[in-house]
Image 1 (cartoon, rainbow, N blue to C red):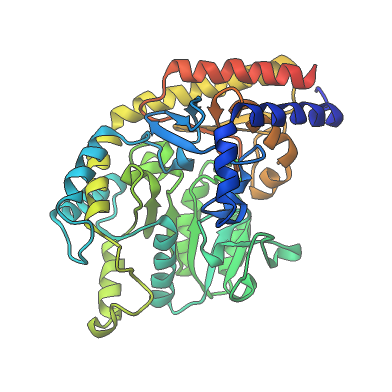
Image 2: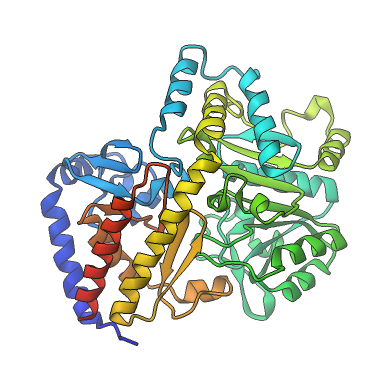
Length: 451
């Protein structure tokens, strides 16, 4: 396999940084102004992770493209890291939201749209009851709280190097001897995660059974295919094994489909006939309007109803005055019914395959020791010869310096990848030309890098 020359990488990276700055004077000006009252010049700290010496400021976004304030058109393969998976400002969602704006944004009272949304989610995912939040992070928090309430247990099991939003229990990794240690990014943890969490490797049913055998696990919080550390696909029978072990040891199974919704209209759960006790999703189902939701079985609904007193139902750590607001409900109804359709995925998935084929062709052309993994409308490359089998393998194959260079090279040629990993996502407006543009750019990039 071809080896990477680090000094060459450094020289090329400096060239790309200079080109980025020269092409974006307006973004640079705005970034300098923004630093006066926002650390790093960004409204949320993780935005400083984009490649380049300052963030790109967006002027407008529509479909699968956005235009920055310097007038540069970009193919958007990040799509808000799934938040805009159905494209920027889909027409049906915009129309529904526009109508709702004049009828009331939030009232703390239900709208008729809530009935349509909960009914549609039940049909998609096979869980009959739903409650709503503003983010999938909040939905995960609520699901965990209910699991603790219903089981009387304290611990949550998560996968090594998982990501479930800013849920405290999930900022844990696997230490020596199977111990739980805080993830390096665990900022201001309320308690050590070893008090709340057990960590196991993805695709390791024996480790999961050992974690459950303690008898103190309330819930297993999982993505049915690991994302956000590279895509790690499950072994045959793995998710079914997780289900069986959860049942045997009295833990509730929570499937987080926030990213794995890319597998199809009903996510990985429906595509592979999985049967969680609770299911969480957010981001994509609102077409860009903040939303989140969690569904659960009739048995869970009955147990909750018998466990929570009406007098205390508003102060038990579940809720939020903006949750289930009319604007979010209108957005979800329109997106689910008119945008996130089977036909949309029939368009998106083949494009993701074509994107993966283009990347693989570039890898093969230069003999790089990399691989590509596919998951529905999503695909990703990583810096190891074979696909990762668990979170640790995926983490260990990462290369932040190389990743930043590749993303900057793409950005300088009008193509945006998600800043946290090498992921590309297709939306209903993505075209073959968009994919071909990435394939050509990627080949040129790796040929220069490995020449």
